[in-house]
Length: 176
Image: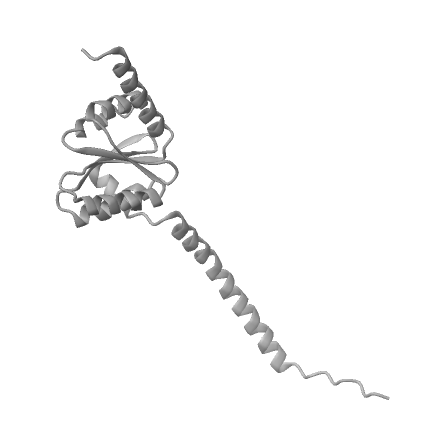
């Protein structure tokens, strides 16, 4: 039977993880079995640079944290060597980085995830990874708004140019 101090430590770990999950935009659960140290280090660096927390913890503790925040459905995926990537702000970035590594490493696989308060399966996480970044979407929106305006401006300029050619040039007054 574990001592009270060990139980208190585990409860604190679960509470901290639950708070991180609750305050996040999205998260991805992966099976990291078979990843080499070099690739794991590179992946963790890429996740860190993207603002994603990558947590390896006992499955029972992760399951309890998921229960606390209402993502109990994720517990069915907590078998083997699992980790959770938690994205605080961007709901797409964790899925993008992890999908890249899942494609490179045969044994590394995406299991499930959550976004907008809903648990999603591996296929939905992969589909989420295909969504362009926020900056790309904004650029596309601005481009689609700008295109008709440019066309309108060119049409106006053509009208002005055409009218300027047909009108006689005004003569400058002679100086005295």
